[in-house]
Length: 222
Image (cartoon, rainbow, N blue to C red):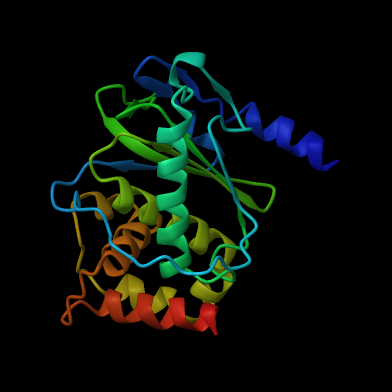
């Protein structure tokens, strides 16, 4: 039954990446990240012992179809990106935050193009299927760590949506502060943008959403 649901869901979410673009059907709960201009500095952390996460980092996503030209051929480069992603995740998240994360696919690209809005250059996608999230990131984008944090915040929200809706959603929606223009697109994007900015180190004390995110994030962790 599980395999059937994955196959069925993938008919709504087909990523076809050719050279430097991908086509994504948004009907399956697909979240996408566009470029900002102020998060292009890589995060620096110490090497922490690995926590007990269940996700895997792969070259080719298991959902949808990826063209061969965007599968990393340089194993050393891919391994370095995967190592860095693992380091960021181990320093920022706890296993409870990402227990819904199935995989992170790193593609040999700078951007992709959404099938419905082909003029938009996107850098990340998070798809939620059958209780698991599948993340796809352009490995050569110039905001790599911020994109990773943004997409993983989508995963956190999806996995712990009931908690958010019960204790934080009302106060969140009452605040009209937005961290970016893209955050105004939807509540999901607002949460991912705010969360990524907070985890990246931007902590505006006057923005109540940062405080709400911090409380929510810590409640999941604890």
